[in-house]
Amino acid sequence: MLNRMKRVAAGLLTAVFLFNIAPVAGVNNVAQVEAAKLVTKGKVNSSILNIRTRKSTKAKKITTLKRGAKVTLLSNNSKWVAVKVKGKVGYTQGKYITIANGATASATTMSKGQSVVNYAKRFLGNPYRWGGTSLTHGADCSGFVMSVYRHFGKSLPHSSYAQRNVGRRVRSLSKAKPGDIICYSGHVAIYMGNNRVIHASNPRDGIKITKGAAYRSIVTIRRIF
Image (cartoon, rainbow, N blue to C red; front, top):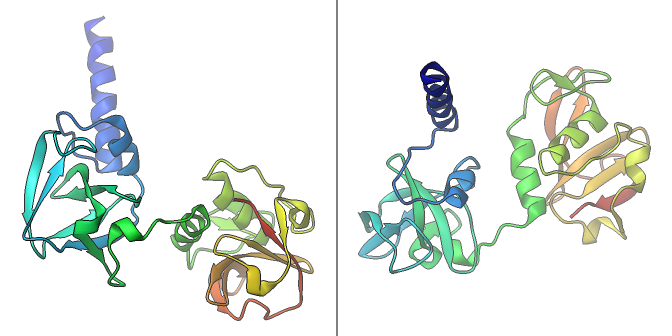
């Protein structure tokens, strides 16, 4: 029994190391889950800013930051956001954090579609492989889209033709939003916004970004979220 308890403890420590989450007394499981998904960087815009264990001004303080201090923003919402700073994870009010475009974190709620795009971008430059579904070792166009969406709990077919029928139809490219699936004849890509797509292009280029979403004739556009 003692040896079994030691093995369990060792496994828990390994999990903490792999996710790069520093255990903080009082930080709830929601914050730890959010810590696994990097969103963006931000800077404190108030004279002092308290990072707390929960979404409450009455919660215990983890640390206090000064104006200009850098934080990793792990979630966005209308008021409270999860952040990681100096290896610790906690919560603070988003209006006191400014991100790269000059907006505050509280005013920058990230859509699910944008989260899909951000996740897909992690695999830029990885190889194309006919029939593949691995985001790291090789995927074809529909395998790439399928595997990206699988990360978000969505089950899509491994076929560019079949993916023409998933989700809801978007009437035109002008109505497309980040995360929408752009279906071409024999090919499929993920729309990034700003007239760009990310896709497993071909064996030469691998997973890449293409400027000009209509670089080939569009058959249909599908929205999953």
